[in-house]
Length: 495
Figure 1 (cartoon, rainbow, N blue to C red):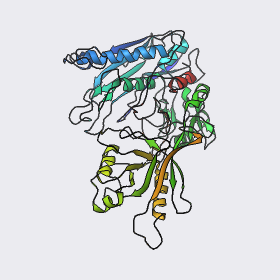
Figure 2 (figure 1 turned 60 degrees about the horizontal axis):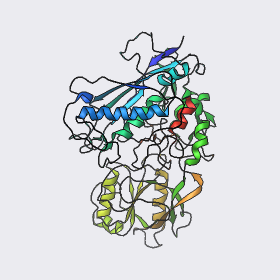
Figure 3 (figure 1 turned 45 degrees about the vertical axis):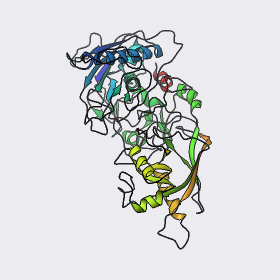
């Protein structure tokens, strides 16, 4: 008899990403949405609103349900299953501040092993387990949670955009992508349902590397693996998570740029990844010239290969929040930044805030250095008044870049401002977001990011992918190569 456990995961994120849709499938899935909102709340909110961006709803609740149904319809066409997929949905107050928020979460409600059609002694998320077993595995099982026949449970932040909760950035409920300063709910929901369908290693506790035991009651060193683990290959350890100890899995979860997905469908589609975009640095100081992979920003002018950035400088770390650029620059930093591209550390305040402060000081561009190990991050945020280009580099490359600037100060002029020069190009020998063999990388920053590490693509991927941990405004509506790899990974799992 198949075994199950119930599991709820909250994905804490200030931003999410999205895309959708596969085509040409022989038999579409059926997705049913069950609201658990009380009267007058969430889907039942009767507040009058004007139709927006292709959403014809005339109340807030109607518009919210329209988006749910719209996204469910798209996912139906992307999947095949003979068993109905049931999503329990609600709008709830979730954690937030004026500058960041938990947008929402979604996860498989039950996990199963030991059913016909699945790999032996391997955990599967319920919607996928039902598809493979060709029956609803919850049917007839004891129900102690109230979600017995639910496959995916979702909740989204009902307070988003209100004062004190990512103030001024509510969910945008149109389907035309014109979300402006809002949060595109179509993209958010598409991404989260991807997790609920199986894009996650939920049966492993990434902070310890332990797996859920057979009884589904505790994480142990001898627990059962999930189907996800057989496709996670650590290039440092030379093995998949399926063959690792708990300690080895724990280490792999914080091995930046070291954990690849080796499933055949993803590898076959990985040719869609572009050549790695790099910042080409030149300096008279020996040993510091070279190429630094970079990430891009959702604000400011578009950047790309062939752009010349100009001279690169740093601001004094003891005068502006340890080099974080969160306050208006003082006289010395303004002098150092004027006409230069300034290097600023990530942290404390938003990326757009840093860029605007640098712009106000006369900088012609910004390079934001990551504050954790891993790839150069994508830079979310919005400020239409930022007119200078902004890119990011990794923490390690930020250290190297500052060293190059320091080393460029002429002999006898120590204490003065040094600089290097930079331009943007690509490295055709490396695919962005892939390992040396071209296999896409999973997100493994150090330190661990609970709810995000391992269960997303790495932020170094280009073009941006649906299942990265951050939202990107350039995403389209396709889940398959050459636009995206979400459907490819779900196929590796068994969809």
